[in-house]
Image (tube, rainbow, N blue to C red):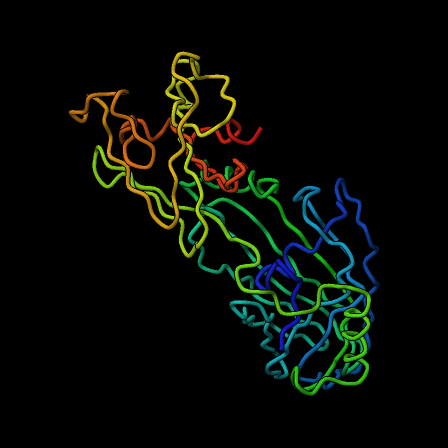
Length: 334
């Protein structure tokens, strides 16, 4: 049994439930002063709830929601005199290897594999003031992979996150039991109170929130392939030659109002896409007959040499942008 915020999913529970900004050295909650007892406690393995959450540091911006999330869980899997292993339950169950010095511990940063241009780092640290209580911090960072700075900046802009940024949240740890099936009465009451208050504690429904980052590639000089993995709904692909300014090609921009499209060419077309879409170029460079042969969902006037000055966007049925990459996403996101 995992506890997750509805419509967000376990994989982002800890990362995004933070709202207040702690900029310029300010914090939304004062860090609790650590106790430094001489006694080394026999720390309990099992599930620990992190309560009374607060933001110690946030350089990521205002768009990270925090709301009323009352706690999240960390599982301590094993403990020795100088190390411990803990798991942050999510879709990937991140396992942290940590150094232990008496009652304090600090985990090595994890950098999970990522298909996007963003590099995320995660780490956990804390100090135990008894065998069952503690003060912990969970830190997350967002930065760009070398050589992919442009794509990364676009992805972070769509997410509303500064580039780069870091986020640290703190809380008071409480031992709850050996596993989620044997939680203490106190911890079960915490869950019950959260549920009765209309909080976020139930399993998310499958596909309740779409995770984006579509892919596009020119399989040859004149053939564009676009893929939206694991999607059941239909969307639209908009393409615009934003890097060419007023001289660019915008007729495939899929925008109801288009400040760059000459009136004589009418309303921009939209290429409908479900899972995959292949467009063949009808540009003269590809032996095509040009604009007169343009057909939505089948042909395009773009070709591979224009890729570095082209912006690609995925739009829903209401022409709202749900993902974007390329030269200048501000053309679509306005």
